Length: 535
Image (cartoon, rainbow, N blue to C red; front, side):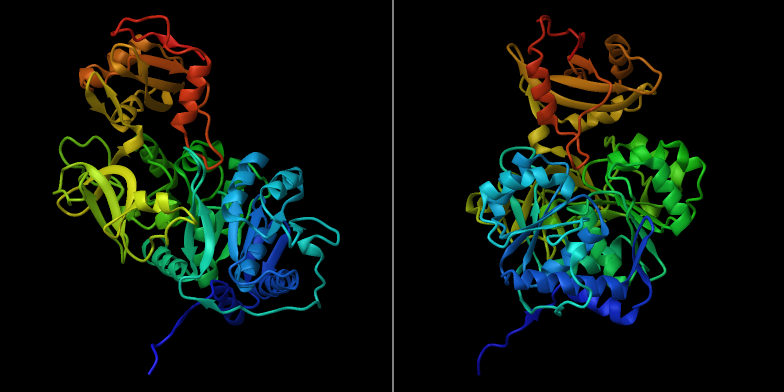
């Protein structure tokens, strides 16, 4: 007898099942647009047939370059229904950035928003778009919305176990972005895991607000909403508008949303949080970067005990740890200055390892490594990156952390964020947490810069709270006694804001480049100087 064979469930089948079960329930809300599950399913089938008619087949890549829109959701599921692989990109990227991504995943067709049409020639030059271009949120013969309602429609195409579903690109904080390969089978597990750990009890009576780009974490968050029949509410503004967000939460009785710390901080500080009813919120999920304790506490005060933190990278589709609402404020071990990011996600295993891969005991810092069904199937056509990222079956996150006796994880920083000053290893997160305790500091980023005497010295880029001013002497005095002398930043920089990537993250490489462009090192060579560096 031959070996038994099995196939994976096409992710589009989540939509097929929900449309059968809840045909007249609302699926997507966008301004006055309200698609039912039946309507969304039919639109997906029409677009999937169009893709197949243009020659798209299993294994082909389709790039999606657009801001959030109902037709973005339609395009996601149509690509899967056609049996192809989705490669969504952040619409805030430049044309050159997207062209680099296209060179990695080599799409055969591009789905693009008219506002980004100027990027098309650059993208086309980097790959072979032999199946053409279709427009999102537009009119005309090449527009998704112009497909005839009575045109050909198809059902879900079979997909094999291990078949590529989504090329999830790293944010490109260093070097060329890498495409983590996410499969239908893997993302099926991730969908179940999100429902289990992040939003337990989600049903068709729930509503999710989309406040982050669907091209990344918010798109993954969409999958459990579709699987359970919860409607997704997409704001009209392409930028975060606190007034619109809280008005929609009140009007649509939103129960969950996916955010990153910068978005959550902005919303919690917005006046609209105090003028609109947000009592429907049960799960306000945040991930993508560490959130400082002071910002967590403020958000909890404003929104209530609804925060759900998860820690994870795109390569593990967010599935490393979870910290549910009732665990926020959990006591931390002695000597640890920041809170836990939670315990391992269901079905996943976390190990803190030394440089040689040896698991370390509780309380010792090492590299956070993870294993389990949510780990990606490696990087697309990148054996060098795969060799660096995987060791003995473990995915190496590149993050540093420690476990406590009960298995809760504490992320102490990125290995790449560490700098060495006078022979001492310094990890910025501890310094940043302490600076944020100062009432006049709204945001801060600490990193190392070259120094002729010490090798590197710490620089703290600080954003004053609204209406406040900062000076280096006051901050040095505030840190005195709170921070070991060798960890004290040697220079302070005061800016009106911290520049962020299209994913809402502070990229320290960018901050270093800005300082270098304004002249580094500063004139003073005194090792104890803590004067202001302007840029």
